[in-house]
Length: 129
Image (tube, rainbow, N blue to C red; front, side, top):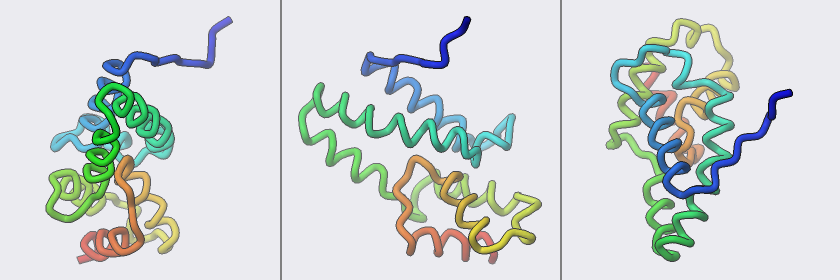
């Protein structure tokens, strides 16, 4: 019988997983386009980030938490924004989606970043330009 659990309890393993997910989601030239907006990858990433922040805060102090808070704020000047925008603009189904479906796609696409409503709307508008 196989286990359905995965235990990562080492800070460096958590950090490596974060870096691998970030690279896979925001790679300039992806091999698998489904990874970027995968709801499954987004769920995994949403579980990982708080654990990584907690581990880094224990290792480096509370300043680490503020650093993560800053890093998780996404804006159009970030490289990840541009990569995600390119990906969304190439999504063939985009035009047929409802506003709710577009918002869900954008949320998954931009995970792990904090997606405030204003930023999400700005992103959708840029996709539709």
